[in-house]
Amino acid sequence: MPPTRLSTAVLDCADAHELAAFYRALLGYGVRAEEPDWVLTGPPEGTPGLSLAFQTEPEYIPPVWPSRAPGAQQMMLHLDIQVDDLPGETARAVGLGARLADHQPQDDVRVLFDPAGHPFCLWTESEAQAQ
Image 1 (cartoon, rainbow, N blue to C red):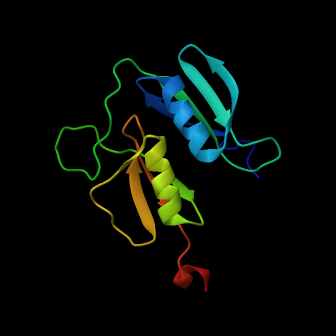
Image 2: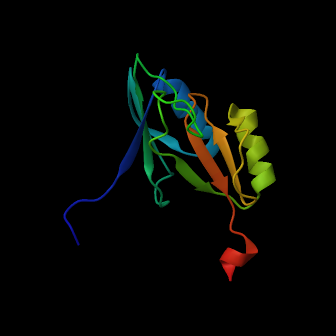
């Protein structure tokens, strides 16, 4: 096993505290550490899961998805979040401030944008995947 391990994904945004609050509500995460322009969140103690950090970037430009405009900020990564109830969790995410993407590529996935414009996917295991 290599002596390194992935611990945290960091999302740039215009307001670290605002975006951290969205993901804390969506994922049930708590704050692990915070500074004026940075917030580290993670799953409850003893629960597996990747930590997410949020960093205020004054020049932040939201990504474009799907890619359409040459020269526009393109999506460089997105979060996949597994859920049991896709319609219910999609509605809850929208209620928390997410926006549903116009383009939906699959029946068992919902692409949304968080309040800072990062795309993320809610997905559920289809019957075909479970077999």
